[in-house]
Image (cartoon, rainbow, N blue to C red; front, top):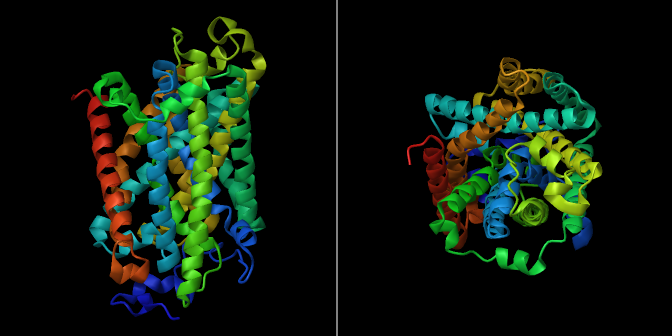
Length: 457
């Protein structure tokens, strides 16, 4: 059956089918999938892109907020983690579907459906969002290097710049290798926090009750603020661009609707499985904060505070040990490194999609990384020796991501609801309305968070 999208009034939106202007051209369609295999073998072939998406939902920018939420309100905010994860699953499924059906990523479609001036403006916002995302990842990685190896913070920041060279090598080895490495790093994060939570012996009943929303979340001002922080730090704009691109790394025959539907189905399953793992990690972070730090007077506003607290018996009791602190630093490094890989890929997608910049791949990735590293490096040099000030930059980055989020979410919902663009794969009514409600809630909460942060309310 021939898909009718190619016959739409604007044929340029399916250029990906003829080999031109492909998103992440060097890996686009590079992973073959079996035609007549069983469910599990087919799912295995599609498994991978979801891992790269999931790391954005468990990057260092989420850690402080989640652990602080548990330390202050015990298990009450687990319901917020659950709701945020469900919204993320909805949006990422739409993002993957957009790329699979159209052969274009979100950046390309946004640029093609706007004027040149608006397109450039949206590119600037998206590029700043990438920088803000990378700031959290770079700070997290460099602090982990200092905690583990006593490497000066500035040197650690410079080391993270070299990640782009590692990514270039990995791209030559194949996209599946990148997926496997990121999956390994994610597994390290899961195992570390599962082990630490197990030692902390949390209340199972308290955890289960925590997943049920309560009106205290809205009535308690401090709880509401942390709620906004968790939601704002969970749904990342760069992941929406990334998801619409790497869903195309699997070989797709867009002349056959059945094969498109199959690709959407398995890509969505992969995305949901990996985002469920991200949900587990974020839950573990909050549970760890509740089990170890609830009722204590210790400050947990910085990574180094958490590192020190895990080896302090006066704070966490008999389970305190240097090994727990080291495991925390290892997980932080794994999170930072996995996130920087996906952040660099997102930067390339945005640069190519919005401004159609043609240059060698190594130059594209180097420029993307330097744009992100430079403000962190300047900040680190200016506040040399003052890690608290440097970590404040991480908080600012999360606030900016809140500002940038609507510029990615709104076009995504519009495009995937457009029947002329998506054909029969356009959002069903319940998906469309759920997406718009989620978008309105996200935008509203983020605006409220920004106003609170700048002291206007």
